[in-house]
Length: 192
Image (cartoon, rainbow, N blue to C red; front, top):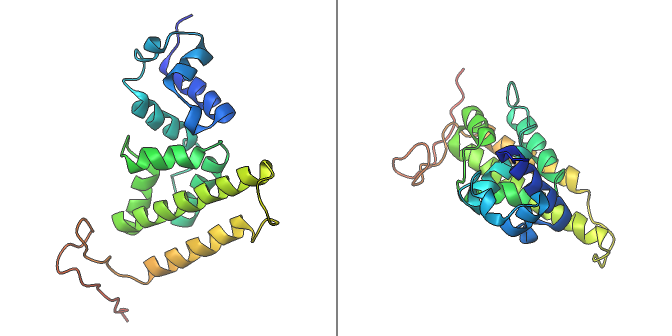
């Protein structure tokens, strides 16, 4: 039976679920499909491309239409937490720009490019920490009882960032930022 690209991605996600990102090699994905590693390259040019496809699959269920920034970040977090090392896969694909991120694009429409990056970096970091904490708890590696509720902590941090974004008319004009210019922060002057 001939495998498809979707079969390769599904096999990679099975290896990820069973062994984690560190052990998710092209050789193991090939073994999962009972093929030689070279057969995978008919579907993906390299491991980085496979990683991007895995990330796309992990976040494929995040609803984009009509979503507000909070709902997008919460949906992204839920999707990443649903897959072992999901936050690492998605954050790595995003950091290396291994594909286009529909979530980032939608967030940029809602809060600007710099606001979107800030929200994504917070969401990735908090979710990675949450996954690490949960895995440590699962293996009995935590020395103390679990701390504050990580879900509530995520919500509070997200509220802080969103309040800050709401309080800024234009983002800081840093190199690569949206406003360019002098690098000074522009203050909001409410219109009456």
